[in-house]
Length: 71
Image (tube, rainbow, N blue to C red):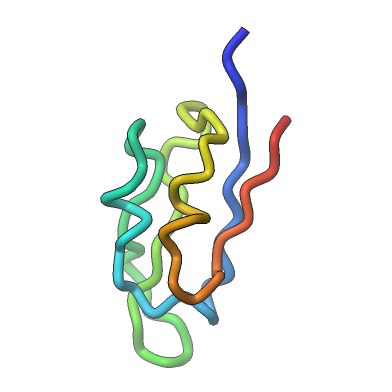
């Protein structure tokens, strides 16, 4: 059985560099349409069902704005 995960992004810590989007092998993340309070467009989860809890997004995030929970 494949791993399932749940990435959680802290919108206020995310500066919208989108390194996590590029690092995700299953395309779970994308840029948000709405800015955070700093004016940045953070990442958001767009396909939760595809998450395999690999942790690539967590590892790539320079702002430690992502936590991945295994289900």
